[in-house]
Length: 331
Image (cartoon, rainbow, N blue to C red):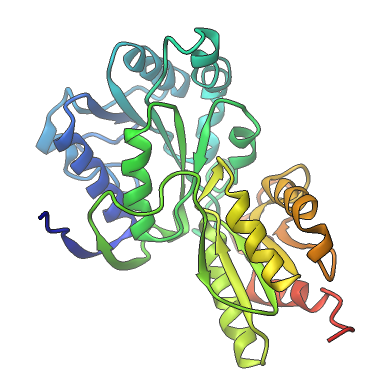
């Protein structure tokens, strides 16, 4: 009977452990990107991997994101399981042609004969006082591209298990890492058991309304639910974990149980993942809804300067205001 190791870790440390354990378990797993070698990455997610596994398993690349992803495609086609890092969210845009035209399409293009077991790690979102190109919420671009799995952890435990699952997947996974949660900390079970890709979880039970969130917005939703409870309102919180595949069953069941819902997401609202969530939930839960589904998102503007980002990001007050707007007259 195996013993699962438990340790209190930050999300960055949990990601580091997931990479280390995957590389120990499988010689075909390797990690590369900008400054991920001796430096250990700008957020220290790859700290110590170069020293432990050497220059052939964890190494730096030139500042050329298209080349990084293109090289990973070639490696994956030849039996390796590459994990690459886009140093910041918007740095991934130069690699977008490789991702959309080749990473996402290879299995379909070859009628299933060639698959690409690779992971593209993307530190994303705001909340760290960064400037444009360093705080984008780029998940909708990847979610809109058939052929990619898109996941985002909200806890250190999920960071570990989801990254292990992503590396083990035979299909390409875009792994969105909320930068502002890199330093969040909790007790982590260092095992591969747990909800896999495509599975949402209910983080908090509630009876009056459901908050649907993912990645960096999950702690905001949980804090809003806590404040609401002090005011006598019971809010349920669903953490999507996986944007693609989308767990319709868990989300729809949660919304049907309360009859009201608000989607919380950092990204701009227009043509976004939050738009898709509202459409899917409305279609599946229409006859259970007591009010139109609300949304709290970033504004439809380029990411603002650091001193103004608190206006852009979903806040507890904005979430509670959206809940107040859910037509409570019949209560």
